[in-house]
Amino acid sequence: MASASITFRTDDEIKRQASAVFAKLGMDMSTGMNVFLRAIVQEQGFPFSITLNSMSLEERRELTKTLRKRLAIIERGDPKDFVSHAEVERMMGL
Image (cartoon, rainbow, N blue to C red; front, side):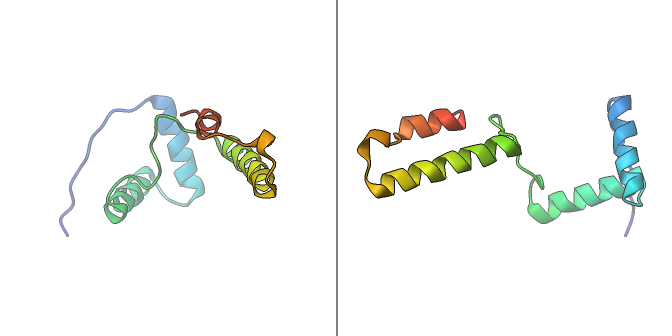
């Protein structure tokens, strides 16, 4: 397979940090970027979610916990603690 060269600009500090991570994983920058590109091809997109309203893992856990509690209340049939669709969207930052 023929090889091709890609040149792009990035922040020095990001490059340094990425190189350090790749080194800990036993690879150089070229190998790490090739892994990333192969993941893009395999996924037919980014191998991670890119969104405008990203929630942190902790925020997602907290929301999940809250929604489970609220669902249990609703299943018990206590209407004073009903969560509206609007409230769920507000909690999710939508």
